[in-house]
Image (cartoon, rainbow, N blue to C red; front, side, top):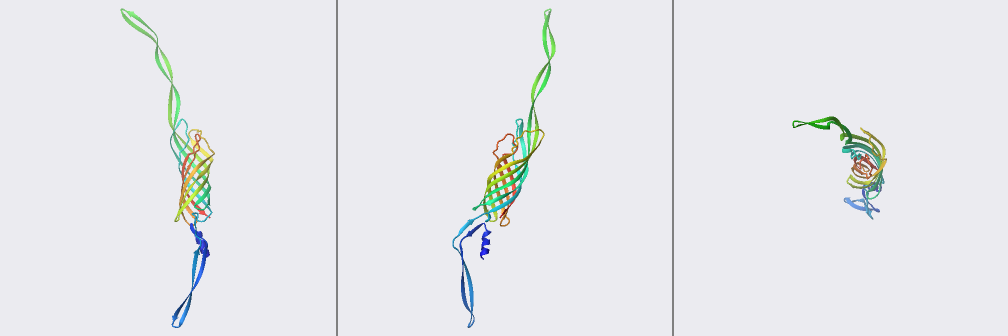
Amino acid sequence: MRIGLFVFLSFVSSSIWGQTTITYDTLVKVQEIEEGIFDTVYYVQKHIHIDKKVVVVDTVRGNKWAIDGYGGITLGGKANYIESNLTFNSNTTSGYHFGSSMYYNFPKKWSLRGGLTFDYQQVSANYTKAKNYTVETSEEVNDTIDTYYTINDGDTSFFHIIETKTIKNIEEKTDYSSLDYNWKIYYLKVPLQLNYAFEKNRWSYNVLVGASFNFLLKQIESNTEQQQETQISFFPSVIISLQSGYFLGNSTFFYLEPIYQKSFLQAHNKVFSNNNYSISLGLKQFF
């Protein structure tokens, strides 16, 4: 019974532990079966007494470590590439990510999470491009170079000597055209987050806050003109996420995790967005 009680207490998330004393009482009952014939029956009564109660709150179910694997998609972000002759119209961001994390679980619902994430994003943006240029125009006009007159019987007649002259002008014009840019960006991200969890029945909700250290692996661009964007090999960002899921077993947790990342990096003509949204599906195993 001691082993069974220990196993039972090990598999609950909120348990009661204390110094336990077990005693046994033997009770004897004598009953008359027939007249003059008596039978003696022995009863053993068990008493369990917990001398001191200690409430142990442990949403990680008594496990010090956990590991997870996850994958998901990018929901959106805005390209920050712009030039003086470009007017931003619209953009779309798509992509996917996958990775794995390790958790170290502290008492009282806290844990520390660290991992590696491979992230691919495809950013497509449409701009209106303004192109300024000059056009030389010419115009032929009649130029009067001399004038004289004659008087005949009081009637004055005027005569003009005219020659044709060409006048040249420089005219400034602006053409507007649609321009599409496409970038394919590969990142290696290292998130480090503090996790607070609370559990109800077999459902668990985790709030994670921390930082992500992002390394650019490769950037490919495809557009109609050569751009001069800034390639940033490393930048940090704040990362906030929420894991909501269900315990499939006592130590296996399936979750959905919306993720928000924000970078405060200011750089001229960087491609990636300061605000990035994504969502993951993951499976966590406690051990």
